[in-house]
Length: 298
Picture: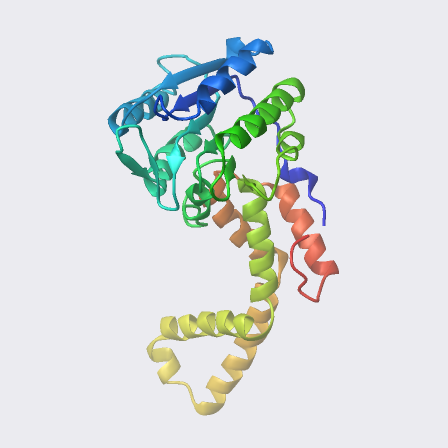
């Protein structure tokens, strides 16, 4: 199942490398900046050094402020962070820490301001947990696209991977082909569009059959009965049976209808990404009609 509409054109004009490493560490941030400058991309790359949590929070705050229309900065950054990390947090040279959840909350604000176009590279061991533990369909996604190491990784591996990724991205503008250059046994790629659409498709396949579908239908019938109030209590047994039969038939038809699915799709897509793509919904709907066996996403 191929979905070309999951990939959108991005308008980035700045790479901001935030260096959260101590002087005794392998200098991946500094080396990445130098290597990109050597290859002619220096004008679009900024390196910012930070030694502690407070400094980092000030940097992020300044980035948020840069989207104020009064400043007319017209900045669309890629945010690259180099730091130490574990499954719970990233660490600064003075040993202060920031949880992945806190980082996600901060980047979420920037991503909202960018209309879900924020690309991030979390160059830290276990950086995968930044996005894995902090995206939920009930909140705006922290980033549109993220690359992060799955587990412990060497500075040299991050340096090579990041340079390959950015050189290809800056020369082609193709985020997908650039990400494919990375070793997927070491790096995790997160695409908010793909993640939502895959989740929606699989949820609909699961919830449109069997016990899950019956539970959704029965919940709607129970709500309808509650709203009838005394009128339901005044019905005879035969009238109640007739009502339930008709209600089940109508709700079965509605829940499986395109209109019903589109309503659900629009609701959650707007919450998660700030927009709803009609073309993608049409692809999902078409595939669901062709695939009645409930196969998972391809």
